[in-house]
Length: 64
Picture 1 (cartoon, rainbow, N blue to C red):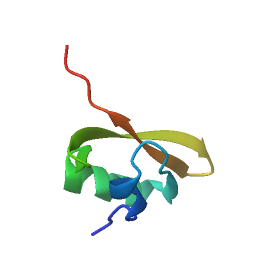
Picture 2 (cartoon, rainbow, N blue to C red):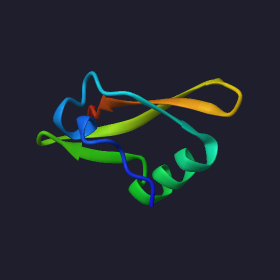
Picture 3 (cartoon, helix red, strand yellow):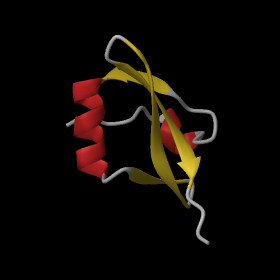
């Protein structure tokens, strides 16, 4: 199972990592695209940066 590094749970607004497509897919399927960090719900965001590599960050979930 692919997991996010601990800094995603302790410093969610500044945490980031890179991973390949397979690891990202496994992470999103395992977490359903969100985590709880520091008492708030964050969506797992990703941006393709080339050659099958993605930058993964978190974005605070907002409800409208």
